[in-house]
Amino acid sequence: MKKIFSKLTSIALLAVSLLLMSAANETQLSAVVNDSVSETEVSYAYLKSIFKAQKTRWKDGSKITLVMLKPESAGGALMCSKVFGQSASDVNKFYMALVFQGQITAPKFCNSDDELKAYVKNTKGAIGLLPAKDAAGAKTIKVDGNVAF
Image 1 (tube, rainbow, N blue to C red):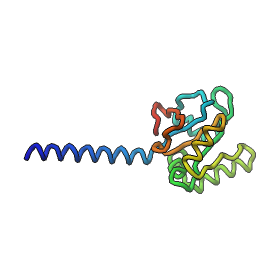
Image 2: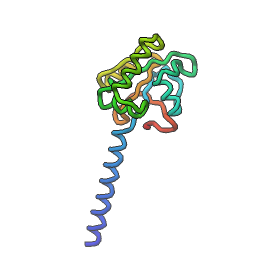
Image 3: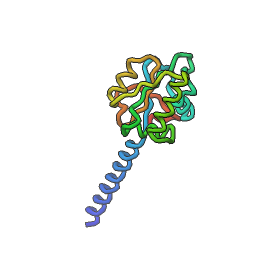
Image 4: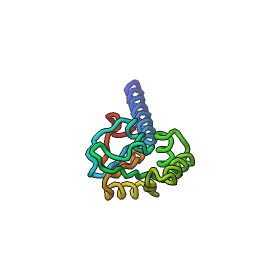
């Protein structure tokens, strides 16, 4: 009886651990980049400055092309929250203001993870953010030493 209880306890702990890991993966992002991007790691602050259009060139001088999921999507809303600390509506307004002021070219907004990965893969200097669980198969860069943040 004790052996059965011990095994059931072990199985229950494993199941809880897997559920927690899965939940964490649902709320983490990964930065995917084009093969031309030489950086292998950036700080979270640097990544935020890229997406807030404060940095428009990679460290080697090449142009950064921003690629994002539409802010209204689940992945886009996660990006808005984690990078900007704002709602999708506020992020849309932020980018519209920068575009209308002539400060940046509008980011490429994608409808799906696959569309974002394909656009980044085919666009020199491109960077995008995806839910970590959806970044498989794409080149990623670490953020503060982690593939997912």
